[in-house]
Amino acid sequence: MDTLQIILVVAALVVVAGLGWYLANRRSSVVESTTPAPTPRTQTGRSGLAGRLTETSRSLGGALRGVFGRGTLDGEFWDGMEEALIGADVGVVASADVVRRVREGRPQDTDEARALLRRNLHEEMTDRDRRLVLGDTKPSIVMVVGVNGAGKTTSIAKLAKLLQTHGKEPLLGAADTFRAAADAQLRTWGERLGADVIGGQEGADPAAVAFDALQAARSRGRDIVIVDTAGRLHSKHNLMAELTKIRRVLERDSDPVDEVLLVLDATAGQNGIAQVEEFARAVGVTGIVLTKLDGTARGGVVVAVERTLGVPVKFIGIGEGIDDLIEFDPAEFVDALLADA
Ligand code: GDP
Image (cartoon, rainbow, N blue to C red; front, side):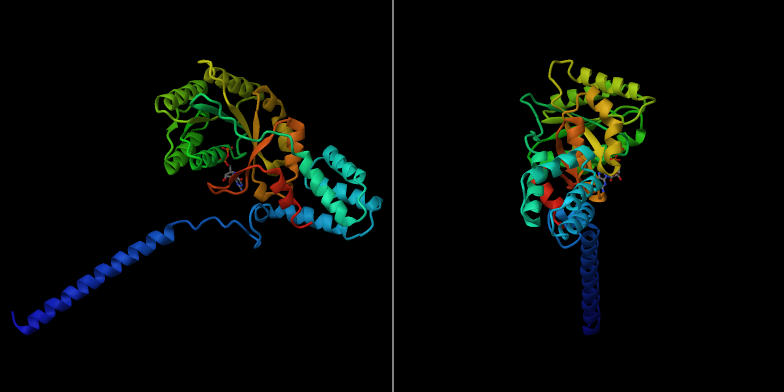
């Protein structure tokens, strides 16, 4: 091989190596760029929950700022406060009660009135046990109910993720066999989370699917089985009968269902509550998951929900991402609601 040939071979090797290096690096940057960026926790530069409840805190804050800006604690001041709360969907009766209690605190100026409002709104939501009850027997059983579109399936996935971060292994049961899409949606989430999903054919008996899921969770040693259920049937009566049957079958081996979580869309406000009141009572709901609080100016509906249904809000949905379900903390929530006031 003469010198020229050696130079050509070396040059070719350099080109091939360079090309290889370029392709490898191009590949890794593509992988990086397709990795979803973490969901921003703020939209307005504010951190935490206040950054997610912007619509409510802006409109409630705006209304209250107008009221506090009056400076005098006269009749119009109190009417304005009550209207602002009603506007945030706190509910007519609850808003009147809160304002009455603030007045009874005899604030001397608007700052004191603001502080009393914060305290009374908070007190509206204390004294409730908001922990997820998981019982002692493994697997714990969590049934999830709610009308279609409320965010049931998404919330189940988020809850499963939350439990995983607490070191629990959930198994998901797709007992809404009336909609093929519900099964598929839950399976997709299950794959992403690395959680098993037990479902059935479209039209299969939902209670049998729920029972299969429970058995699978038992035999696989999972900590919790979370059962998705139908959100709509031919009639409300049929839906309630179906949900009651699922519960009965799950409890056949004498282990009680630990939680029946009702998923409720906050954007539906008071109308949403009226829609589910009857069946919430019939199936023995133990906790509420209030979704889409990030997309409504009516975040005060938390108060109305608890008053009407008499059941604690345990989790709130504040976005579409898998991490956007948080345990409900009244103090943090009231601070977020009044962040702009
Ligand atoms: P299901 O019919 O009750 O199972 O409802 P899905 O889980 O399919 O949710 C319906 C829609 O609501 C989907 O587009 C979800 O991404 C959306 N969603 C659920 N929870 C939230 C939330 O907390 N915030 C927002 N912005 N969207 C949500």
